Length: 80
View 1 (cartoon, helix red, strand yellow):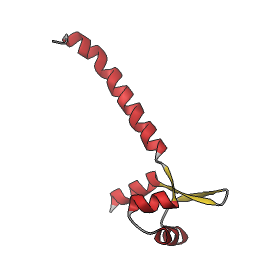
View 2 (cartoon, one colour; view 1 turned 90 degrees about the vertical axis):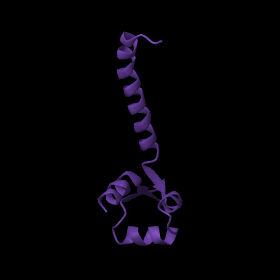
View 3 (cartoon, helix red, strand yellow; view 1 turned 180 degrees about the vertical axis):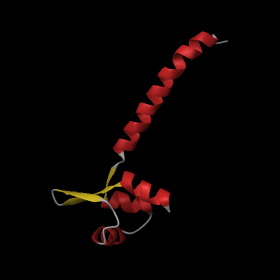
């Protein structure tokens, strides 16, 4: 059986590591290409572009490519 004092020492370390891992995963998926966003949102790429044109999807352009801010999209969906 694991000593309770040991568990008290380990718990905060494990919590911190899990929080860091979750943040890294969120950061990794923050910016999605139009193709990736269309797959994740289950809509066509043309629907994504239409929503960008209407100002409904937060995005950035880099070297002619468009990237959708999926963190912002998640916040928008949470408000629905």
